[in-house]
Amino acid sequence: MESPPRAGTDQELLKATLGGDEEAFVEIYRRYRDRVYRFACRMAGSAEVARDVTQTCFASLLETPARFDGRVCLGTYLCAAARNQSLRHAGRAWRERPSGSSPDLRPGGGPSPLEVLLEDERARIVREALSTLAPLHREVLILVEYEDLDLATVAEIVGAEVGAVKVRLHRARRKLRAALEAHVESGALTVERG
Image 1 (tube, rainbow, N blue to C red):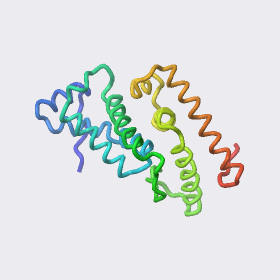
Image 2 (cartoon, rainbow, N blue to C red):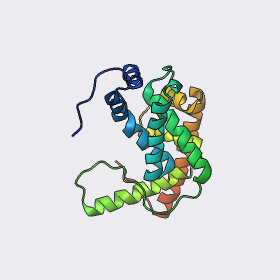
Image 3 (cartoon, rainbow, N blue to C red):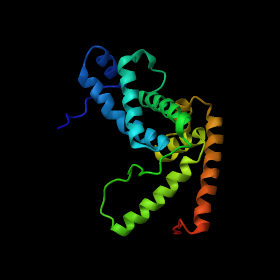
Image 4 (tube, rainbow, N blue to C red):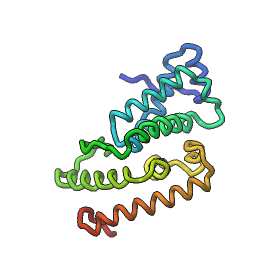
Protein backbone atom coordinates (compact mmCIF):
# COMPACT_ATOMS: atom_id res chain seq x y z
CA MET A 1 0.00 0.00 0.00
CA GLU A 2 1.33 3.42 -0.99
CA SER A 3 1.88 5.97 1.71
CA PRO A 4 -0.02 9.25 1.40
CA PRO A 5 1.60 12.03 -0.62
CA ARG A 6 4.19 13.99 1.25
CA ALA A 7 3.98 17.76 1.49
CA GLY A 8 6.80 20.03 0.50
CA THR A 9 8.20 21.78 -2.52
CA ASP A 10 10.35 19.94 -5.01
CA GLN A 11 13.43 21.77 -3.73
CA GLU A 12 12.63 20.79 -0.12
CA LEU A 13 12.15 17.17 -1.15
CA LEU A 14 15.36 17.15 -3.17
CA LYS A 15 17.29 18.64 -0.25
CA ALA A 16 15.82 15.99 2.07
CA THR A 17 16.77 13.32 -0.48
CA LEU A 18 20.35 14.56 -0.45
CA GLY A 19 20.25 14.20 3.32
CA GLY A 20 19.37 10.52 2.98
CA ASP A 21 15.56 10.75 3.25
CA GLU A 22 14.35 7.95 0.97
CA GLU A 23 10.69 8.89 1.40
CA ALA A 24 11.44 12.34 -0.03
CA PHE A 25 12.82 10.76 -3.20
CA VAL A 26 9.84 8.42 -3.38
CA GLU A 27 7.57 11.49 -3.33
CA ILE A 28 9.55 13.13 -6.16
CA TYR A 29 9.26 9.90 -8.13
CA ARG A 30 5.52 9.67 -7.41
CA ARG A 31 4.95 13.25 -8.59
CA TYR A 32 6.73 12.96 -11.92
CA ARG A 33 7.04 9.30 -12.99
CA ASP A 34 3.86 9.20 -15.05
CA ARG A 35 4.63 12.37 -17.01
CA VAL A 36 8.21 11.26 -17.71
CA TYR A 37 7.09 7.75 -18.70
CA ARG A 38 4.26 8.93 -21.00
CA PHE A 39 6.53 11.41 -22.74
CA ALA A 40 9.31 8.84 -23.20
CA CYS A 41 6.82 6.22 -24.37
CA ARG A 42 5.38 8.48 -27.02
CA MET A 43 8.80 9.67 -28.13
CA ALA A 44 10.30 6.18 -28.34
CA GLY A 45 7.17 4.25 -29.30
CA SER A 46 8.19 1.51 -26.89
CA ALA A 47 7.10 0.80 -23.34
CA GLU A 48 10.39 -0.99 -22.68
CA VAL A 49 12.48 1.98 -23.82
CA ALA A 50 10.21 4.33 -21.85
CA ARG A 51 10.79 2.32 -18.67
CA ASP A 52 14.55 2.48 -19.24
CA VAL A 53 14.45 6.22 -19.95
CA THR A 54 12.32 6.87 -16.86
CA GLN A 55 14.61 4.82 -14.67
CA THR A 56 17.70 6.54 -16.08
CA CYS A 57 16.22 10.01 -15.48
CA PHE A 58 15.40 9.34 -11.85
CA ALA A 59 18.65 7.45 -11.20
CA SER A 60 20.59 10.38 -12.65
CA LEU A 61 18.72 12.80 -10.40
CA LEU A 62 19.57 10.65 -7.40
CA GLU A 63 23.22 10.13 -8.40
CA THR A 64 24.01 13.70 -9.52
CA PRO A 65 21.40 16.03 -8.04
CA ALA A 66 23.68 19.03 -8.59
CA ARG A 67 22.69 18.95 -12.27
CA PHE A 68 19.31 20.27 -11.20
CA ASP A 69 20.03 23.93 -10.53
CA GLY A 70 16.49 25.03 -9.67
CA ARG A 71 16.13 27.50 -12.57
CA VAL A 72 13.18 25.45 -13.89
CA CYS A 73 10.70 23.27 -12.05
CA LEU A 74 11.76 19.70 -11.37
CA GLY A 75 9.10 18.27 -13.70
CA THR A 76 10.47 20.36 -16.56
CA TYR A 77 14.02 19.26 -15.73
CA LEU A 78 13.00 15.58 -15.72
CA CYS A 79 11.14 15.93 -19.04
CA ALA A 80 14.23 17.54 -20.54
CA ALA A 81 16.30 14.61 -19.28
CA ALA A 82 13.74 12.18 -20.76
CA ARG A 83 13.90 14.13 -24.02
CA ASN A 84 17.68 13.77 -24.18
CA GLN A 85 17.54 10.06 -23.41
CA SER A 86 14.73 9.52 -25.95
CA LEU A 87 16.60 11.42 -28.65
CA ARG A 88 19.70 9.30 -28.03
CA HIS A 89 17.59 6.22 -28.54
CA ALA A 90 15.83 7.74 -31.56
CA GLY A 91 19.15 8.64 -33.11
CA ARG A 92 20.00 4.96 -33.15
CA ALA A 93 16.70 3.49 -34.22
CA TRP A 94 13.79 5.86 -34.88
CA ARG A 95 13.40 4.61 -38.45
CA GLU A 96 13.79 0.95 -37.46
CA ARG A 97 10.68 0.44 -35.37
CA PRO A 98 9.59 -3.14 -34.82
CA SER A 99 6.10 -3.86 -36.08
CA GLY A 100 5.12 -5.43 -32.75
CA SER A 101 2.48 -4.19 -30.40
CA SER A 102 2.47 -0.67 -29.07
CA PRO A 103 1.86 0.31 -25.46
CA ASP A 104 -1.75 0.81 -24.42
CA LEU A 105 -2.03 4.36 -23.12
CA ARG A 106 -5.84 4.49 -22.87
CA PRO A 107 -7.46 4.90 -19.48
CA GLY A 108 -9.52 1.97 -18.26
CA GLY A 109 -13.21 1.85 -19.05
CA GLY A 110 -15.97 -0.33 -20.41
CA PRO A 111 -16.19 0.09 -24.19
CA SER A 112 -17.48 -2.73 -26.35
CA PRO A 113 -14.98 -5.04 -28.07
CA LEU A 114 -15.75 -3.41 -31.44
CA GLU A 115 -15.19 0.07 -29.99
CA VAL A 116 -11.90 -1.11 -28.50
CA LEU A 117 -10.83 -2.58 -31.83
CA LEU A 118 -11.72 0.59 -33.75
CA GLU A 119 -10.05 2.83 -31.17
CA ASP A 120 -6.94 0.64 -31.18
CA GLU A 121 -6.79 0.86 -34.97
CA ARG A 122 -7.18 4.66 -34.92
CA ALA A 123 -4.54 4.93 -32.19
CA ARG A 124 -2.18 2.69 -34.17
CA ILE A 125 -2.58 4.86 -37.27
CA VAL A 126 -1.96 8.05 -35.26
CA ARG A 127 1.09 6.48 -33.54
CA GLU A 128 2.49 5.43 -36.91
CA ALA A 129 1.91 8.90 -38.35
CA LEU A 130 3.46 10.48 -35.26
CA SER A 131 6.50 8.18 -35.52
CA THR A 132 7.20 9.44 -39.05
CA LEU A 133 7.75 12.98 -37.78
CA ALA A 134 11.30 14.12 -37.16
CA PRO A 135 12.15 13.89 -33.44
CA LEU A 136 12.25 17.70 -33.03
CA HIS A 137 8.71 17.97 -34.39
CA ARG A 138 7.42 14.89 -32.59
CA GLU A 139 8.63 16.03 -29.17
CA VAL A 140 6.93 19.44 -29.26
CA LEU A 141 3.69 17.92 -30.51
CA ILE A 142 3.72 15.32 -27.73
CA LEU A 143 4.53 17.87 -25.03
CA VAL A 144 1.83 20.31 -26.15
CA GLU A 145 -0.95 17.97 -27.28
CA TYR A 146 -0.52 14.95 -25.02
CA GLU A 147 1.12 16.43 -21.93
CA ASP A 148 -0.78 19.73 -22.17
CA LEU A 149 2.27 21.85 -21.39
CA ASP A 150 2.44 25.54 -22.29
CA LEU A 151 4.86 26.76 -24.95
CA ALA A 152 7.23 28.38 -22.44
CA THR A 153 7.63 25.10 -20.53
CA VAL A 154 8.12 23.17 -23.77
CA ALA A 155 10.77 25.70 -24.81
CA GLU A 156 12.63 25.09 -21.53
CA ILE A 157 12.43 21.31 -21.99
CA VAL A 158 13.70 21.30 -25.57
CA GLY A 159 16.21 24.11 -25.07
CA ALA A 160 14.79 26.43 -27.70
CA GLU A 161 13.11 29.82 -27.91
CA VAL A 162 9.31 29.95 -27.72
CA GLY A 163 9.21 31.19 -31.33
CA ALA A 164 11.15 28.13 -32.50
CA VAL A 165 8.77 25.87 -30.57
CA LYS A 166 5.80 27.55 -32.27
CA VAL A 167 7.35 26.94 -35.69
CA ARG A 168 8.14 23.29 -34.87
CA LEU A 169 4.63 22.78 -33.52
CA HIS A 170 3.05 24.32 -36.61
CA ARG A 171 5.16 22.14 -38.92
CA ALA A 172 4.49 19.04 -36.82
CA ARG A 173 0.74 19.59 -36.91
CA ARG A 174 0.83 20.22 -40.67
CA LYS A 175 2.87 17.06 -41.35
CA LEU A 176 0.74 14.95 -39.00
CA ARG A 177 -2.44 16.28 -40.63
CA ALA A 178 -1.10 15.40 -44.09
CA ALA A 179 -0.17 11.88 -42.97
CA LEU A 180 -3.58 11.33 -41.39
CA GLU A 181 -5.42 12.77 -44.39
CA ALA A 182 -3.73 10.14 -46.54
CA HIS A 183 -5.23 7.47 -44.27
CA VAL A 184 -8.65 9.12 -44.43
CA GLU A 185 -8.51 9.24 -48.23
CA SER A 186 -7.55 5.57 -48.38
CA GLY A 187 -10.45 4.69 -46.08
CA ALA A 188 -8.16 3.29 -43.37
CA LEU A 189 -9.21 6.05 -40.96
CA THR A 190 -12.63 7.59 -40.55
CA VAL A 191 -13.23 11.03 -39.17
CA GLU A 192 -16.20 11.62 -36.90
CA ARG A 193 -17.83 14.90 -37.77
CA GLY A 194 -19.92 16.56 -35.13
